[in-house]
Image 1 (tube, rainbow, N blue to C red):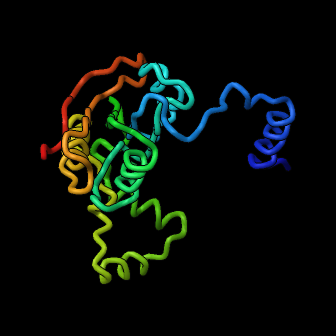
Image 2 (cartoon, rainbow, N blue to C red; image 1 turned 90 degrees about the vertical axis):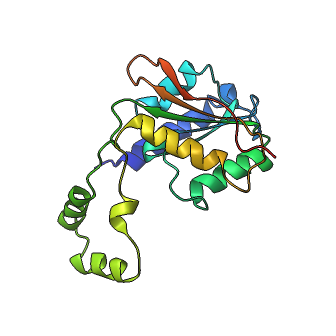
Image 3 (cartoon, rainbow, N blue to C red; image 1 turned 60 degrees about the vertical axis):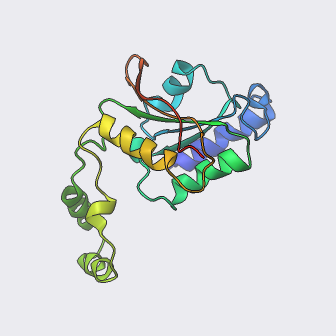
Length: 190
């Protein structure tokens, strides 16, 4: 029985052999000097770049569940700092979307699903005793606007980002691609 991996590798062999990668060649520096934090929702994979007039090589695009920044020293902020300090990004866009799965995410429902799929109940107790608040970690937001505003605020006010760095918050319609500005502007001033 062929697996999804077999299918991908077979396609990839043809892709490389036929030089189909040529239209995507670029370097690692974003041509439009921007970084975009957005959601991992599959509806946005092609739609968001087209709605923002981005082609391959124009921007550093970071995706996670909900376009959320919870930890000021977590992976998302590290990626944004690399985009700014190493790759030349001069502007950051946080783009949430309507109908996001992180809106009203129920951590208890996730815990039940984890247990159903084989995570031992004792794991939750161990993590709790280690001081890890899984409920907070797996919580989304009440509204997309709130999530975007919170992420933008954390980025704008981060002590390791340069004063005056433009950080904008937008919401995209995952059906039409229409962008709505939630907040535009700049980070802390010097």
